[in-house]
Length: 222
Image (cartoon, rainbow, N blue to C red):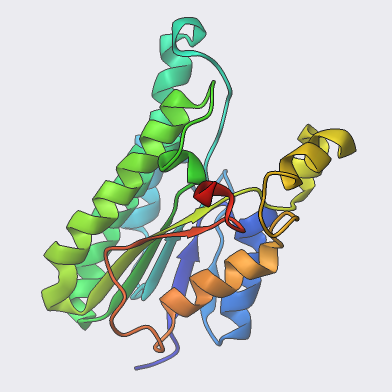
């Protein structure tokens, strides 16, 4: 095959930026579209983006997401719909649009970035958790459907990751309390998450498919 191409959503910062950098290091030609180019809250934008892609995409990493906090009773319909659209429906739309190219080349890797809140619960994350749990279920089904075409599909569910946004949203004291509940005693480094996703996207992964791999330092084991 020629040089493989990867599409990473949310690749401008945090985990997504590190994923893109690691895939470039691995030899991929990586697309990281800006929101102006690919607005995941807009079906029209997604469809237009897919339509203009005329080169094979070997790897799709659905990383972008939003996480507004709120209890079900207080979340307005508009916010619920936006959480579901960006975190679940837009990955579905991207996958649906890109798999014909993967099927044509009889090769592909899809990684959906999920969350520990898809496997354990925390207040005010009901809709977000439901959307991410939907990604896990989608990965399992697609793994079965696309296996005959040599396309492997997995979810990665990160726990607390040391990103700029995490440091912005949480005080040092709050982070200290969180890490006290993580068996490894620290937040994940973005490079650790990126390396896991890089492996799943690589030719070294020939048999892992349909899995939700939790990377959380043991947080969900307690």
